[in-house]
Image (cartoon, rainbow, N blue to C red; front, side):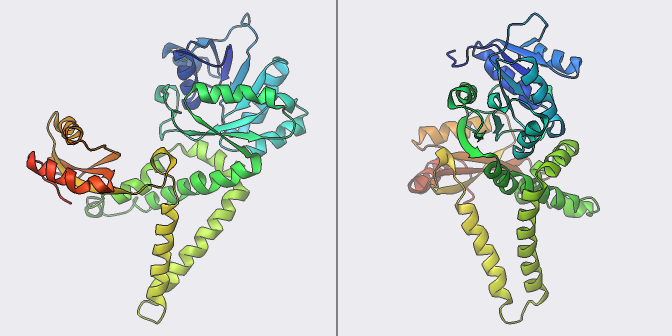
Length: 360
């Protein structure tokens, strides 16, 4: 498989991101050296094919990727810069301003350092969760600063493109503000909603559907890691949380005074603003194209979902996206199929003719 990086590439930290980077590069024929403070963790990543264990006799790496927790990122990057004075070093921590500030305070050579951040991940952590296609089609931020040259930083572009990701350049400040809004506060909101379920009656939990599961999906993430991320980006996260608090206070006040003049308007306004916000999110291929939603009953039997996909294709309709939801105790699921608006009626007719139960 062709690749831009010549290697070797040294990866320090073999958790989810480090292992996934190693798997992706190794699959493309790049020589990957693996290092970790935990020898067993590095050995596990090597066993899964993410690279080979680094040794004292290794050739000088072309590029070093530091994939360690945020609270030790600057320390590890500084050590790698000092140990390999010819190499370019990047890190993949979720915050970018703090490591750069700490590196400058340490007197590190930041002319060879360029932080980056792949906007990809899972609720699971560790080498076992790694996958070589984790970054495919995902944004990967390059957190630019004035002390590194374009020629040096181009290696980070090569890394990102080799892994199938999409490079996006931002300043460290822009990055931290952006992730506070699109990642860090959503994580907190998911966590806080999920925390309400601790004492909920079991009968209430049996009613949970796709909406609750969507909202709480990331609440299963590693608390220790998120404690570091949130504290490292505290200022930007706090700004967004205050905006969210103001919005919540407005809705609470409107509900407390339900029936009084203006209360319904305030609630409706909050809901409409939510519609307008989510409509701005880029969808498939980064566009804002709207799709029709068709709900199809799928029996819980082998081959049914594959048959549905085949029948949609045979009808000449492109499947844009799909989601499956199961109700407790039911021996079937509901497939939410998204297709182009002008294909909705054609698809419903074709599926109905083939014996599928179309729910809407």
